[in-house]
Length: 393
Image 1: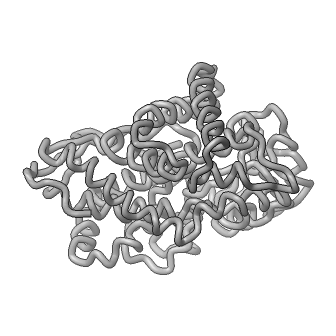
Image 2: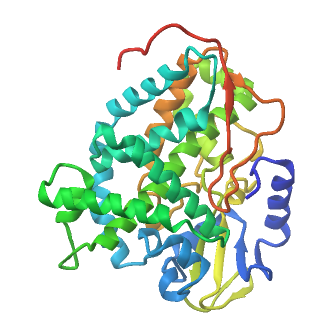
Image 3: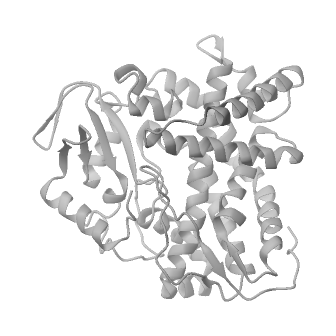
């Protein structure tokens, strides 16, 4: 997807909201939804706009990409699975992760702070969320590197699936093999981690199968790692592109939470999402038939001028800011509080520990080539080298 902040993309969204807010794309045979109110109504109406791609469109691109994960289910099973998983994302559970996130962030910054330059994605933004997911799953520190390598393979295969390219079956097999071994260890010696909890839990009187657990692990990687990683790098990129707002934030760090919400609106980690019409229905006079694909443009909804005054202005103090970047309704992102915490702690540490921070690139930044996730492929930074060690955490 194109950069939501690029002038041509903003103009395209503006034109579609005004002239074709509900548009059928003959090339992809998909209904495209652009206005905020329409996008929100689609996401809220799980009966009219289903997430059960496997049932309604078996073997389709959507079925292939989402592979029956929790985001590809409707009630009642969706609610039961979400109820199990949500216990790992309670406010208390998220707060308990803060010391680990702070410590890991500082360790990563220690490695680059004396160099005067870094590539933020590979040095921190993609590494930190992987470590956090590993902590949730109860992985030993010695496994974090191999887990990161395996997750990179899963994310690469997700991109290939969306592009209808052949998958690297070897990477999937290695990931599945590692997770199956981990499941066997947790069955033999349960711990206080998320996997042990899911192994002991029941849905509709039955334990989750290994396949369901493997699917959940994949979903954690695709959603948790990509969303948090893109939020961190998008935040630093956007703040550097708008130095007046960066100076405003440096002058008042209390603005950091609202600054991250504005980044989520302005450069959302996810630009589009999908549904399938569960029945024949009408939207803005357009007849949508059962089993037709529907794509909601979250990035366009976040720029809707009827909801957000001066939508193309980056304002870290914007309020209210009811963006749809984490979706809404029953499929509201369960990991949103964790992504926000990671983003807040990481951005604060980066700004505090890398003085005179600036983009280390003369040309335009390359956006990540993905039809769903939005972020920069590389974010080279320069800063004044520091000889000081990590602050206490």
